[in-house]
Length: 449
Image (cartoon, rainbow, N blue to C red; front, side):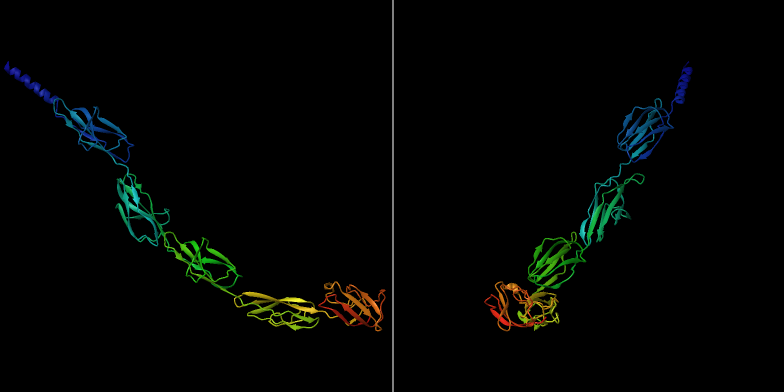
């Protein structure tokens, strides 16, 4: 009997050993990496022994685990925002539970380039300094630069958060590319710019000149400058003091200066120091006065010498009646009273003027030829209209008055009081100007038809 019981117990023990084995957690698969939280997938377990009790996850590299009530061989996931570990707890019968291998879903955070600071505006060159990245998430992959305002970029082999620069002398943009892992997208920092202004050049004013007092005008022009005009300045005391002229144009007009004047411009290019242009010196000269001489009176068909004088080149107008209008003392023989103007031009081109009048006296004729040929037909008194109170009396050789008029109007052509032609002969006239300064004149007149 005892022997039979022992055999039964041994059978039961062997049966239990054959029915339950040591728990084996198995092997999980499905490890993956993602660059964003937009993800979906599953983890599977194989080669386990026993019954799946549940799944577990950890978001702190296995320091603590959370249970997922899932006893199947797969565990799904989606939209994980951080790296997550997965494993399975397996138990076989009365044996202790076992843990599977771990599968990790790695979530790489997006690269954040951060903020790049530095750069600026400089004159001539940047000097020495550094560009610095702050607030980044990820590592610098490389830096880039562009000298055509970002159309093309050149790679700079630098993986540091700091980029040291030295004497940049042209407009340049810089930026850095930041990434977490090579398989994930990179991010690019903001651009920083180096704006390099060329050194100011005040330029040149196009001329200096000697000009005539009160009769001048021209335009000064600034050339070869680098930068913009801030204002103009003028000085009438040879540069001891300067007066500001509110003009930003590159040209300046002047007119009728009466004092010698210097001009300059103030030019500035960007952040570079301002600079003066060359000085335009306008020297005002007083031209020598022209002197046309004293007025003169001549008999018609006679001549006189005009006594002009001065410094420079002489020119007379009008030219009629002058033997040479380009000398100071021409011979003048005008047919009628004429005013001549002497224009004097000096070596600086300055001109002055003065005038002289040559009074031409037409003599009382000694003969008339009243034959209606239009020449010497009438007894003509010069400037008869100036003497409205005049009178004329004509007598023959016997003292008999044959003609009279008051006032006389230059219309006697050898006729008597009745309008009949007088015979050719010598007659005598008495002409009263009716003017105290002129008085009475008398003489003879020949009529010759």
